[in-house]
Image (cartoon, rainbow, N blue to C red; front, top):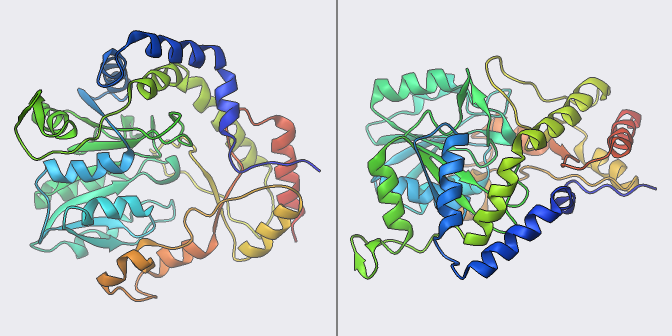
Length: 365
């Protein structure tokens, strides 16, 4: 029996092993390990890739998100609109700053339903947090129209959407700030934690640079009460290697997902859709089924691993019970939490492995 994990990070390493190992030695031998030339070079290269004016490297995707709201001055008494079916880090970035998340249901593409945003806007609403979930760009044109109409800030959670576009424009360039994670499982993944913000606003970029380094723009001279959130030199080096290959890595994932979309044929499951005008970089391949536990068990019996992204929506998590949002308040979000399933997808996945997964799902009755 074949054994297939839902994700295989080692395959991504072996694809470019020599380059990664050479980069590690280069950084180790340089004698400079924090905020050096690798971080600066990566920031320039990623800004260029993302078609942004500025990129600032940070320690994680969560740091990128909460620091974004901090430098925008959003906090106690403010409200931020966010979709209900996101990863809890999106919501934490709001509440860490003392602001209140206002949840909106997702659309059929798992991203925020723009038709339900305006009804949630109050005099306390200060921003919309747009999450490009699973790798597909959100419906940005009407979101930006709403933000202009009401004078709202827009922060984009691009943790899963490196390189995705809407109407030809890169995610992370529509709003005030784009927030990225380089967690190892991402399409552009490091070998540890890492993150970044992108922006076209020079003041925001400068504020984030100062804030990430103890609030200091000159050593021991502190402008604000900041934090320690610096992208590591060695991780920046690894990210530069992977960024140089990102186009081929995304092409490979797209081909795998095109096979899935074409060859998965089982009326018990619902395949993901792609919105007109949006591109999908396939961070995850997410199906839906009302018989999820049975399917998980069936695939597990065949040595195929799966993951649920995500089994408990943030509003029902123990962490956010204080918000007082009862079960049934977000029925679409809750339905997704009970039916979505991510099937194996990773760079280096062999055709034999793909066929094995496809056949196993098609045989499920």
